[in-house]
Image (cartoon, rainbow, N blue to C red; front, side, top):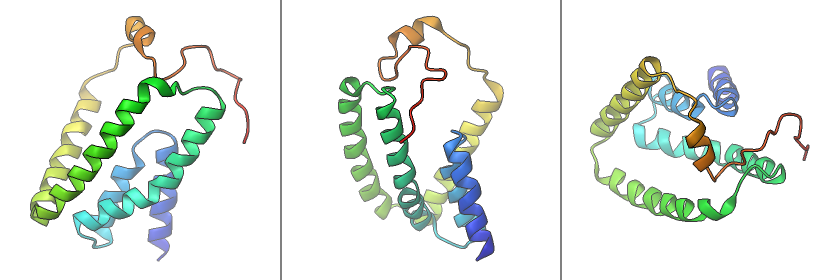
Length: 141
């Protein structure tokens, strides 16, 4: 029981730092807690909904989100999540676990080998997040 709370605490901190705590929580649930892949992914989604909702509220209050370009992406994401969850029910659990492991491995290697370059042109085109200098302009909720 202690390890479950500890894992939830650590992955929550990592998620709030943008490290990808959800991926780590799924690894913990499948490798150490004995959950199958599909159950672990469902638990992970339920775990992070409140964290994501709080982040959206805080970023919206701080005027860091431009909702207009995000609406189509949100709609497509919802449709994709529904379709993906339906497809996942028909995939063998061991195959789903293997697909997830390969995905984590590929992303990990990519993150280690490729350094992200600051691209001023990309920053100009990014309309989802405000480009103004936000240092010190945060409001509390």
